[in-house]
Image 1 (cartoon, rainbow, N blue to C red):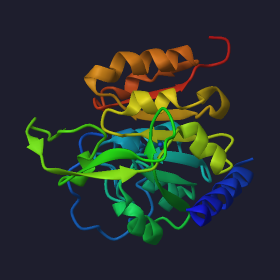
Image 2 (cartoon, rainbow, N blue to C red):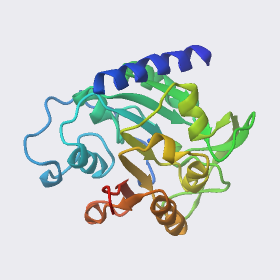
Image 3 (cartoon, one colour):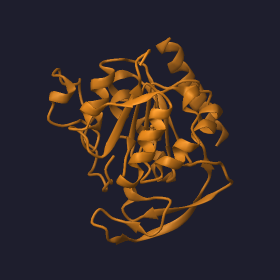
Image 4 (tube, rainbow, N blue to C red):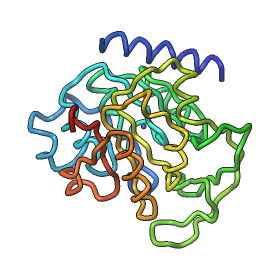
Length: 253
């Protein structure tokens, strides 16, 4: 694991010098060939994203424009390309970052398809312990901390308990030499509040956060970001009813 962390520090530190973490996932279809240049029309006017499951990628592109060489953290990253909210940033705009997921299954694909970034196998939560139980579902994209695992229709999905090393967001970033973030994506099947509790957002100040907001977590998520000087970007709600998007409030507000 140490060599992976060292590689992460080198990759992301380089990105910082050059610049001056969605809906319940189903299994993806076989990957298509890498896309060519991005379409010229404004992102939110495009019918569909190249990689993300819904319109997340288009919203992220609308916010950052064509900014190059940024740094991201993708928590609950899952597949390296299909359904990814960060693959476009790396593939087309040269971003670097870290993908972290409780399932080690995704490591090989990340190693092949994400050469500018690194994959780490952790359960991100509110405290670090040696290991914690995690439930790998037959539908991998809805694997989660809680059991039983319920599918999109509310039916129980078969799952297998595994043990995964746990970490907080703050510890993960410190271990990899990250001092600030451009983009944080969090999609961990209802465990988002615990991840936020273990995150010193005042230190890292991501410019944009995309976070899955299940109904039971929405009040906590709104209050957390408001308390730390962020505001919800409400114009994105018409494009995405699953995730919330937060940005730093303008100075003086």
